[in-house]
Image 1 (spheres, one colour):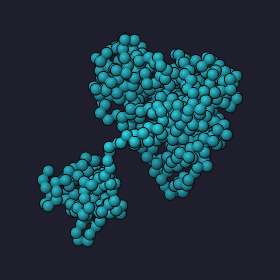
Image 2 (cartoon, rainbow, N blue to C red):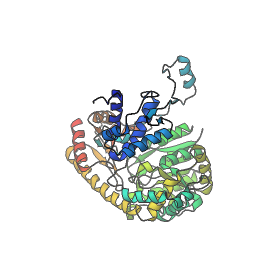
Image 3 (cartoon, helix red, strand yellow):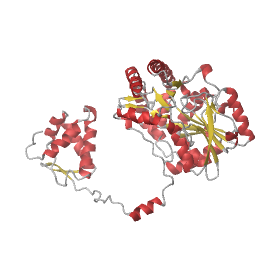
Image 4 (cartoon, rainbow, N blue to C red):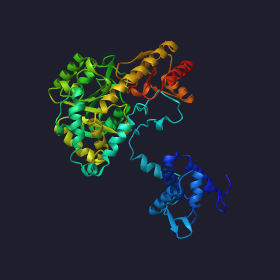
Length: 488
């Protein structure tokens, strides 16, 4: 990189960093990079910014776009503009240097106040950077996502008419148009008819789980969770101080037995047991409801990829056959659409919804109104159902490819999978350690999940893996199974 006249070579490095962005995002990249370099002291106060023509030439941008970005930094206080002289770095109040040495007394302060045991860390990779085969899928595939339709709905939601509707602080209620679409288009497919006061919009299914664990759990409350189960629900249940009860499962989901009978609250996933994908038979669902009534147990029905089921494969939900009003239903729109939208919902008795709404108000008040409105428009305009059908067919095709590849290359693996889900529960020979295999796979760029992390009993088996086809291509499936075979 040549020096730019009298400017330090550091400017060249900064401009090169901005240039890594695509042409469509370079202006945004310029705002972010320059602000960061000013705040961290890389660019000192009074340093002159190179001429806009030179920046524009180096970035292959229009000079007006460069001027616009620099002017925005002036408005934000990062730069100052001097007539006939150019732009200069402003004197910005940044954080004073801090010492990162931790004294023993400071350790004592925080050790006595933070939870014991500490909140479990869940290793999540941002968009699985560094892994070329993500069998640990996020459920998002840009090729399946109806981007054009969603953009149209987002644009409509950002019109002045729509903003005047959703822009207010709506703690007391969610977007009535989204509630209407859930009532008429989504919930009936689960066999559920609900009134508006029986529905709460949450920040994803995760937000719903947190709120319910906080509301219904607590010291001395017997809180039942399937074993294996979603680790995050286990963690938030423990944080609430609840006594966690392990409910055993088999190839038909949660087992109605003494463990379930001892619970005051029980969380079940009858549609697709998480993570094994088992589908609970209808008769067992009736048996569980009968036991819950006899033992005065509240049931939380959590869904996992049940939107992809259709016709006779989709059995009646616990909520739809509950006649005592003790089932609370947690739902999300098709997980494959875009988990980043963070939209979930709870269906329950109005008293429960009212309390959940008050609890949610203390955390983040309500789910963003613009996202609610855009999603309502997306369903209203008939985009959601076609997407679900497309996702189901594609995931079924990928799943069949994965099953064939596993049968051909690793016949010693026992695979359990039920229709309508993107994940596969794999049992290795007893001599194999799934956790160790997961670590070895990561070193080769292959991302899989160890089954051990889903169990919460002391005798958790270590010979399971969970694979997902939600975010992989055909070539990645074949290559990924080949790598697993070589590791085994």
